[in-house]
Image (cartoon, rainbow over all chains, first blue to last red; front, side, top):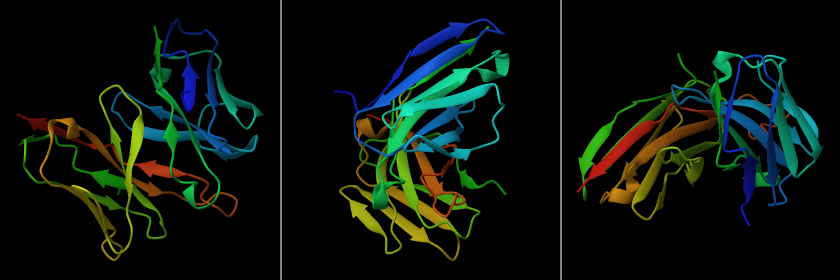
Length: 114
Length: 115
């Protein structure tokens, strides 16, 4: 009954590969996000979707492509992985209305690019 | 000036101590303020929202000073279980007329409570 679940938890891959991270929330929230936490522990937003529509797209290389098949899912596909992509990627969701800025995070995917 | 700045610590305190964390933010238009807690190798979790009048939740007290663009978190009677990184969070620029959860996170202040 995990609220925001993302898979895999760990992802180790070679440079140049393409990989995906999946995220699902069962909270009925309208908005979902991808955040990246780098080695310096700095947590920064990458994308936000509201009801399957992209609403935030920060300065992220276009090798990163989010996909939202429905409002409960937001997957992240990364092409041509680079060493600098190594980080922890957190999926999150938030409700509509006054609670929309209270984020519920998944447990994170630690990506290591070798 | 960074968008959200915090003292990185670490703060090493004995059990029972009172500890205060400070945070400053650069966007004077920010309207929403939070403290999140992140345990080692875990996801961030909302600790409390910060309201203009200040608010308290048990041993935790949050204060906001809009004029100085300053936020604080006070923890009284520290417990071992309070050991974590505390993230100051402020809403960022609005997108399409609404902030829609565009939150700017500080780098966090690490707290270690010792027996």
